[in-house]
Length: 320
Image 1 (cartoon, rainbow, N blue to C red):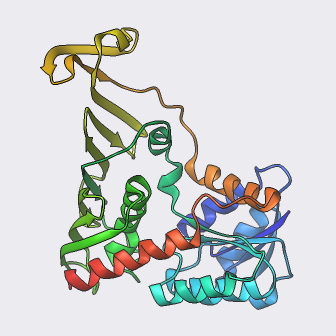
Image 2 (image 1 turned 90 degrees about the vertical axis):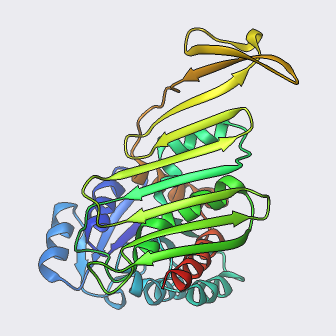
Image 3 (image 1 turned 90 degrees about the horizontal axis):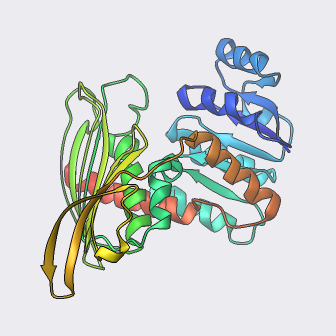
């Protein structure tokens, strides 16, 4: 499978480094208008450099890691030329553009996957093996200021990761949004807090900032009989659960006490699930390539990516 990386910024350079490590994948092209950087990355990984999408040859697939404002135009060109697309998040700059891409895909055999990389975080993937029915979720995604990705607000840059995770975890639509945001260092919102209510009754309190001294990526999930805390930066987790005494596994569960409930006596246990480290970007690339080869649904669809953008736009309107 011959592919191209479009955009060689922070994420684009990581994609270029990892893409050639997949069996049956050849990094054939690097596309970037910056000749010095683009040609350097291309030479480093044995690819050809092109200044624009129109100049590169027809390939099997592309990974679009250019600025968000260019995603729609670049993806449109690549789809018109018959190339499968992996598009870094947010998929497009606006919900309207995402809808336009979806209409283009209605009668197309081509595959589009959106790069919501936190879906592939080892700590998040652990949740796939659990019965999820959250009542309340609290999220903090805080980062030091970096002079990149400031063409979009912190909502579309950072919070959108958590919007996608919330939609995935709750499997529910959004019924209400409240939000407050402040512009501090840029012309767009740099810190935002949103309270999102889902139609299934779950409520999420989400805070994102790109002007924080100490980085933090934590997600706390509260549901009946279980509390789960995820540290997404360190890919670690800890849980508190209520279990029947007969279900206790002393090898990895620490009993903290016994309480009496309407269902009988329950043991409160604390545990730290063992999580195998993986490279989330490598894993999302592999999922994309596997979907192309097997013609199976993508891990993160453009429909899901579009809905995350729609909720982000709602939050941005309220925050302004």
